[in-house]
Length: 262
Image (cartoon, rainbow, N blue to C red; front, top):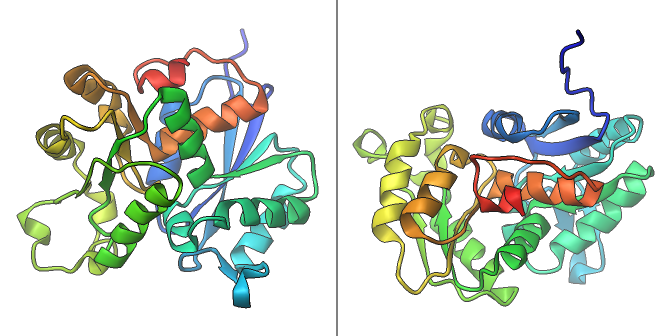
């Protein structure tokens, strides 16, 4: 009897992720259906991973993004996703579409290219969310946090409220920008995140959006939906769902929110 080896007979997905993060792959592996594989290219460039030229006449891709694209071009991928919420936020409206166009030309295969920003918009539409409660990682400084809220508003969403997760007293004396390099990325606690979202979600929100692909959270999505009686979207969940949609894969994935059952 042969065992499942996730060879990717149904779909093979390429994912650009932050070089020092473990969360994106771990969460994708937890949710992946059988016969779908995910393959990561790691990026060390700061956000955004592609920079606008003067007057926004085009983009210059980061070297790591170009290198990963060249590697992906030989892998017979179904979909390639730029798994970085911050790049979409800092890149502002129009960045997602421009980087998709550039990467599609660079990869030069039949793979469909998307971004986490585009994936989230598709997930919000499918879930009927117009007034999300946006939850952001603790390592986002005020500038990045405000850019994230503005990004969703610029795309026509009314942000009901937003929350930057408080990781607790151990991290109190560190500014947001120093949290990740001091180890918070590997010490995230989903139980306290659950409690903060439950306590802070306003009645006016028609759904919850947990942004940030390095933000550990898929373990609590189903519980939050049951508790708050509203759809809950997360960055990695949205990208996996949208990539499966783009690849034409129908899968029965339970335990990680209603989105993956649509």
